[in-house]
Amino acid sequence: MEVELIKKTLFFLGAGFSFGTGCLTSGEMFSDLKKKILSDDDSFTPTEKEALQFLISCMAYHAEWRSIKTGGEIEFNPNIEELVLLIRRIKNRELFLPYPITGNWADKLVELETAYKKQDRKNLFEELELKLKSLLKNHWLESDEDKFGYLAPIRAFFQGYSEQSFRLDVCTLNNDLVIEKYFGAHHEIPWRGFYNGKWIGIDDEDKLDEFGRINLYKLHGSIDWARVESGEIYEESKFPEEEKEYIEPFHNPYVIFGQGSKTISVEPFFSLMKKFNELLRIKKYIFVIGYSFFDPYINNLLFYASKGFNRLIIVNPKFGPKRIYNSEIIDFDENDFFKIKYPKGTNPKDLEVYIKNIQKDSFFSELPEYNYTGITAQNIDFVPLETSIFIEKYFSNKGELLLSFIDKYDKEMKDYEEPF
Image 1 (cartoon, helix red, strand yellow):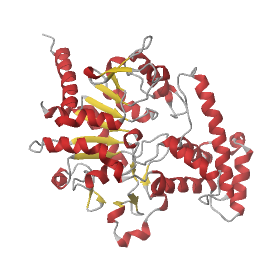
Image 2 (image 1 turned 90 degrees about the vertical axis):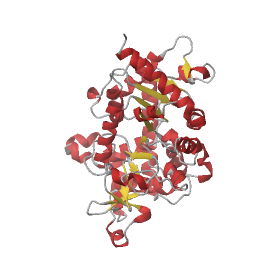
Image 3 (image 1 turned 180 degrees about the vertical axis):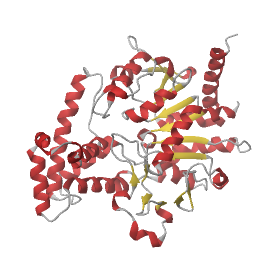
Image 4 (image 1 turned 45 degrees about the vertical axis):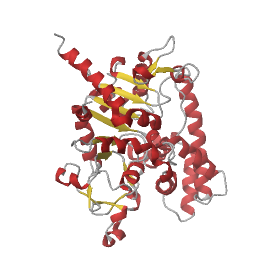
């Protein structure tokens, strides 16, 4: 099978890719936070706990209201990124609303902020955001290296084609270190745009020979990155001793955390997003693994790239309206690359409508009317497998199933472009 097909393929990863390694999903982080603020855990002060309890109660009400509004088609559950977004909006409210209009903000928030300042503390909601980022780095994204074995077929895939020069392009929204730790342990460190611990950019290809065969573009940063006052970005394990006193507390770790507008013009995020967009324009087949599609900004890029005959292959055991992924009615054909056989009364069009509804939801985007909704059912394939099963099935035997899958698309594309 022609491994050159890999050069037409991009892998895009969401939180589900690391599920099972000990890293918590956004929803699990939210549940863990609730346990902390309802217990004797001393991570937060009493005032901070009271503020979080108030916000979480408001989010629960809003999530139920949004679920009912969809007629039960989408079951919204609060998650940690939504909480961070809410905290950020409260913290910055004076920046986009003049004071008289902010009277509609709950008096409870004002009371909590006042009480916090009386304790000789800084801004309540700024402190909460910092503490949540600390939990993200030091607790929520801890991974168990004994559970990294599910990545072994990918490494075996590389070894099966050791004489051929190709690299796996991987873009991810994840901040965890699962891929780096697994391949680093085998002396196959992914290329992330860092050299000798310092960010140098992602297009310095003369350095690639010193790294493994994965180009790993972490669009939202990483828990082992930190930024100093000069704007330089370093990897934690190779941080210069003389720079440590200049680390910006809010940018340690240096990650984008929380939904909302993510068009950031600072490095490395600007270059990473630019690279992502470039890859989307040249790749024909995009495997979207473990991603929920609840980020309209990312969706806009994915959907624009899927125009024409390009394909989005969604790999997720539970995606879309519940009537599609309900375990009692789901079925898929192993002989047809494990793609879903849609239950009676449902079809790929339902996934198209589901995604478009997310794009139109004002909760996920400040300007939903600008979001791109040009995704069509013919551009979507749904493979309802967990990440570990997908990797095992598709990358084993020198990637026979994966390459056959891509080859089938490639032949269909050629027939479409050259019908005679």
